[in-house]
Image 1 (tube, rainbow, N blue to C red):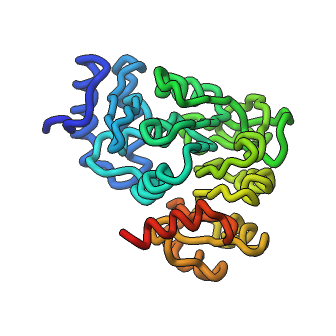
Image 2: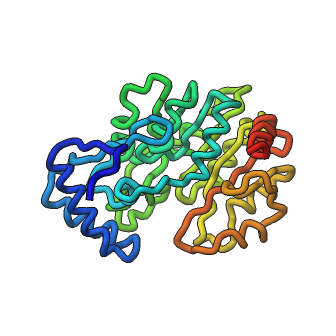
Image 3: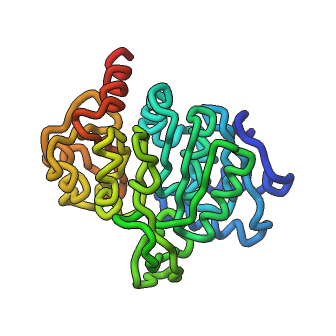
Length: 299
């Protein structure tokens, strides 16, 4: 089976590794097997082996072939979270600033690099931050910061870097199968310049409410937030916090023109406890939100 036309390889050995993974992944019955096959095969290859995927916007994203999370999306011809991509495409026509808060290895930063005038990408885990820096190399409109998104800036906090699961790294003081490292915090209000209506992608693995507490000004000034409410959170605490702020517009990212009236609307949408669901939130009077809704209504 041939490689996707939008994919290139870091070496010939990477191409071989890719094709072997394609064969193994036919037998992966769940997400655990994806990671197990990926890491097991990687022991026989150079850890720097990678595929470089050209994204729908023309940006390029490098995926290590020992990465059990991102290889799932490199090896199968499917678009990653298309509802987020649709929102970012529309947002780029109405704001020049994108904040990728919890950027991981830089997928959305790379995706938006050809659309936005300025991007700030923030990642807390040191090793993941290194991969982010590699992915954005040569992108003059991207600024990267190693920090943890939190309610206040300048605090030193412990961060759990989870072994074999970089997407699960989070603030905390218990290693839980990973290792602790110290990282400085920064608030969204200190990332988004005053007077700027930004589109913010927030993915901070359990610290969403603390992150939102640090976004009071930028939300009041009209910024729009894309956030995750995970199916495992049966109480939908993140969405609950936003509703309790009052005068907030919340909608499902896959259907952004339909306003959610309350927490039950959110919980009905979350049918899979192992999946994260993307939602959109902003002050109801946000001009950027109004522009987004108007654009989606026309489509």
